[in-house]
Length: 365
Length: 167
Picture 1 (tube, rainbow over the protein chains, first blue to last red):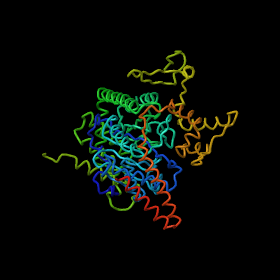
Picture 2 (cartoon, rainbow over the protein chains, first blue to last red; picture 1 turned 30 degrees about the vertical axis):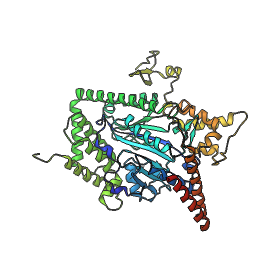
Picture 3 (cartoon, one colour; picture 1 turned 90 degrees about the horizontal axis):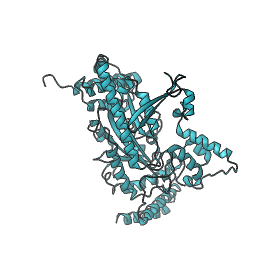
């Protein structure tokens, strides 16, 4: 498997933006990852550079015999420039742990592997030696788990994992041991936020073994009414049970969100219409946009689309803006060096205006 | 709003539960909530820090003061673990088994893996992979020590082994 410049692959890792999955007007994406470690090596926190190098080459040796990542894309994270690493982070393809905590220095021998035809791959030398992962469009825990599961079967039949008869798969942090499985759904809940039902729902999910985070995972703030709901525990339940539970509970949350939206449309039509159109207007005309402001405006337009209060743009366009209007993506598109905060906000507004103008049907068509 | 239970005090704890696909909300005053074992603040605590704190206490209050560790393989101590929340290697799970069992029970509600049973690769292949890993480490050490003669020898052994794996 040859290392590759991921920038030469159009929209690398962004297949999920296409909004093709179930309930994609509410659930943006589903992610499943499992943590695995190799026998005979210390965990990453204790691993010396030579251990990390040996882990990387041991895994690399079997990748070519591992469908579906054979002939896939291999990215040496530690050989990327810092913007390249931030691009992957903004695409949710790597963790902060893998690219370096401050984005300035990556841990040695860290790598990202992605299948070239399926949304599945792995991180090497993360907090755990291996993090197998899949990111798909919409709300589809079972399908997404299936992709990770087959990759795990293939890799596990070739690599000796650290496994304990009682504790299951051993991980650096005991919160991940057992199945090593974390499944999460990125979900847009403006209806529940506006009807002030959201805290009840979040309390409810925390009582049934689920937890929530913001857009950028652990420790991140909730912006743009986007919540990542995931399982809290990884031990004592089978993978199927964990996945089915998430499917069932998040399915209910999707249902509550639909009900809340129906209530809003019925009881506060004018307020909602105004909110949606104002958001759309600002996105199309603003000359400077902060990222959080952008996320809140996108939330309004996304809601308007789902309620058919506005006819366009497509959800795909909104998903794209969410990724490409982030700082590293704007700098990458500009080709210049790093931009200051105010410059970024101006570039963000320019990008959003052009993305929306492109998406609009031309007059007469 | 008055407490659903005693109907006397102001409700301050709002408990939402999902049971059999039905979401219900119960409003309770602090004393009724405490009676039912609900603490309004408890949901905010990060689970792991709780467990780690508990682990420290357990080490102090145990009469025999059996202090496990450090891990004979990676030298991780209880303090290292308590500070970082991370274990150093798979062997740590054996060294700190009894403390971990308590921690795992509190985090996950169980200590037993009920997921897929992992079957390690056929032993011959695993042996080869382990030998290969060992050789690679030796190669690294030889190169670092600038012992290039030895490095060349190890490299040949690695190539031989790789050829055997590919065959």
